Image (cartoon, rainbow over the protein chains, first blue to last red):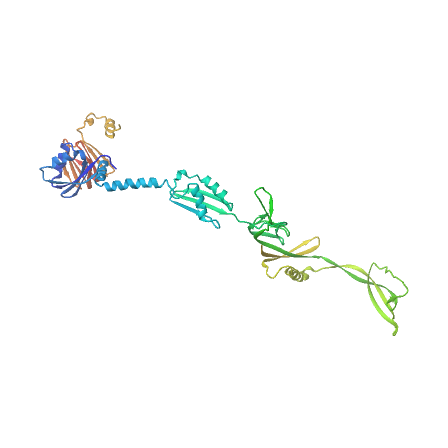
Length: 374
Length: 87
C-alpha cells in the first residue's frame, strides 16, 4: 500500500498534448498517464497536486472527473466513513485474542470402566475445564492427580492442543494370579516361532527364534513393581512351524548266517514234560541254527524224545543294493512320520534328505507343520 | 548517489554533454524509454509520441504507449518501442 495519497482522474476532451504541456509548465508531476480512447485520458497525481490540476483544466475544453483515491490516508478515511466495518474488525481481533487464551473443549479418550464424569471431577478440582485459562493449567499435576485417584489407570497423559484439553488414559489389564505353580507355554516339538502375541506372561523368545521341544516360549510369571516374579498362567497366541521327522540308516552291506554243513544232533528224553537224565549240552559252534523234532516213544505213555540238531553257521557280509530299497524305505518313513501327527495338523511342507555317512545311507523324512499354541 | 547518465557522460568526456539542456535517452529492452531534456509534448497517442527538443524533434513510434511518469524535465514511457528518431 502506498503511503502517499493519490487521486485518479478521467479527462475527456481533445488536444491532450496541450494539457500535458500545461502540466509540465506548471510543474504538476503526474504518473500512469494512458490514453484509453481517442477522447479519454486517465492520469494519476498526488493529492497535493489536485487543486493545481483542477485549476489548470478549468475553463479549458476538458471534462475532468475524479474516479478513485488510494493511499494510506485514503484507506483510513474510508474506514472512518464505514465505521461499522472498522468496529467489526477490531471486535473480531479482540475476541480471537481472548478466545485463544481459554480452553474451549475437553476431550477424554481411553476410558472403558471408569466413568467420564469421574475424570471431569478431577479436572474440575484442578481448575482445568471449559473456559479455564490455558496459562493456569498444570498438566503434570493433573496427571498425578488422576493416577493417584484411580488405581485402575496405568497411564494418564494430559496436554493442551490449541484450545482443546486432551486427556488420554489407559486402564490396567488385570491378569489371573495363581497360587502355587505357574503355567508355562511350552514348545511341543522343535519349531520356529512365526507369530507371537502375549496377553499375559513373559515371552522368553521372539518371532524368528528356533526352539527345541520342551523349551518354555512364554513363561507363566510377570514382574511386579518390586521386581519380584508373580506366578500366573501364561496366555498367548503363538504360531510356529514345527518339524516332525523320522530317520533310517541302511548300511552298504548286511550280515547273514550261512550253514557250513557241519551239524550235531542231540536227543533229550522227557517223561510227563519233565526232562530225564539231566544232560545239558553246550553246542561248541560259534554260530548255529537249531531244528527240533519230537517223537513219542510209547503212544499211551507221556514219554517222548526231542531231537535237537545244531547246524553250524558262519556270518557272511552281503552287499546291499540301496537303490532297490530306497523307495520302500521312503514309504515306510512317511508312514511312521504321519503316525506321529494329529489329523488336524496343517502340513505346509514335506522333505526327504538322503545322505551317506560312514558306509551308511541315511534317509530322513521331515514334515513341516503350521501350529498355533495357546 | 549513483547516476547512470552522469557516469556515461563522464566516460565520454565531452564538455557540453553535461549540460542539462542536451537531451538524453535510455531505452531498456525496447519496453521502457526514459527521455531527459525535452521541452514539450507535440503528439501523444498509444502508437506515437513526439517530443520537442531544443533544436530538434524526437519521433517515438511503437505500440501500447503510456506515460509512467511525467515532469518538467523527464518522461518515462512504457510500451513497445519500435523506433526513436531525432530530426
